[in-house]
Image 1 (spheres, rainbow, N blue to C red):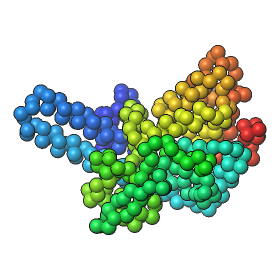
Image 2: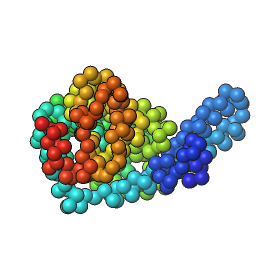
Image 3: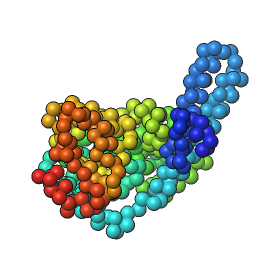
Image 4: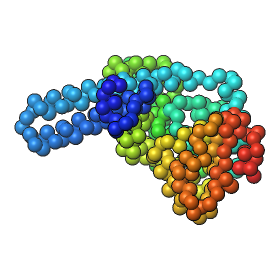
Length: 327
């Protein structure tokens, strides 16, 4: 798998045991084989053996990709159980954010796990909305039993009375779809564990697949243009366009798709929003953040608009940077 991924990468790039790159290569190869299938249909329409062979190889590449994705997500699922010490720090941060700012607060999550979702439900269940449409019902069938589950929203019609909003820009452990990608639902953690969904995907015993962007940077743009990621990005762009406070926690500023959205909104405003970057250590640098956001030389010194707290997210609420940001 690593060798195939290496060959799919641009010159000079390496896998570095990065699952996103390794597994993403098989998504890239699957799309390439799909184009080859279209080419075969156009150039050799009567050659059924050729088309059948390409279909078999494409199916195999999809199986390898699905097996890789399911294993990565299974590990994340197993290791994303919140310890008490972590929970208290996250709860403290969320209380500081929600308690300080009136009106709508949007959380745009790049992680696949459910830690942030669980914490928000624990603290603010009645004020929270996410991309699942709780007032409607979809269904999944497993072991011959049909279960009612919430479908994912097709529009950004989150209820106005829920002032806290959670967007999963690159999908979630809980987002699933059928092979035809005609139905999208949210499955809770207990369902995933009870029915061993990860194993079922790897063994080809289910028609549903997790909905996540697990791809290399070159292919990620194509993924985020598809539903439900496209809707999440649309709502993300709308949310940062209407606020003057951006809090960015634990982000490397290396995701081109996310950077593009932030840069477009940031550069379009003559009165720049105040940005607080919470990280642990020296990375990312101020210059890296300026480049990602599109802060130009004509904008002058960024220190009054782009703030840094480098002591970790759980200590953020007691920092001087937070006091300045939230004033």
